[in-house]
Image 1 (cartoon, rainbow, N blue to C red):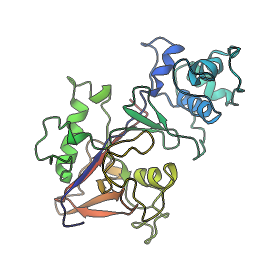
Image 2 (image 1 turned 180 degrees about the vertical axis):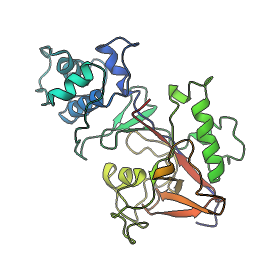
Image 3 (image 1 turned 30 degrees about the vertical axis):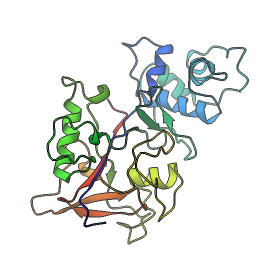
Length: 290
């Protein structure tokens, strides 16, 4: 498939999920991406509480709100509250970050109420649920193929345009969209700790092997636009990645002589490099900093 010029373009971003925090604090006081509040939400969901208004044992009303406000659970709740580090509760209550608290890998991915983003409480990043947004939204960037694939330079330009969209407010109100980080050193990889299968140290590798529970050689989807949990439009092909130290909207190749950049395949779980002029897809996320 190396002869086929395609580009993997996927956006994943930090949570609008935390808009539910508005049940506790005013909109102008709360940043929906606070790590401490997010850890409480993840613990609530892991304890069996459900996202969605009106649901019995609802995540926000029956778990998150009682923990943060220090009030009793509604009588309709039948599940006990999870145990949360008091420092994390205070940090969320005071609208500031606390030291990270380890979240088990089995904690489920959390889709936002509007279905546009998916939060990973383990990696602490928010993915765009549409794994091939570029196929329908180019942000006026040229050289994007009708199927959403593009060369690496176009991918960098597309992400930069996304961060400047909506009059500078950024797509979905975020200005820190970026390519998933990857690249060496990653001792989990099967080939000398740099490339191969089982590379769980990269962002897409963590998603593929740990969050989705797939194995080397397996494809995420059989055909395009089959849903995988809360994600959709995932292409069973190569996606551009960015070496960790250069990740973000400024991601680019390492100097004018560099001809390759990292990529990850959602078609078989392989992590490696590809020629910059090849067409791959793009998937993006943003960290909990904006």
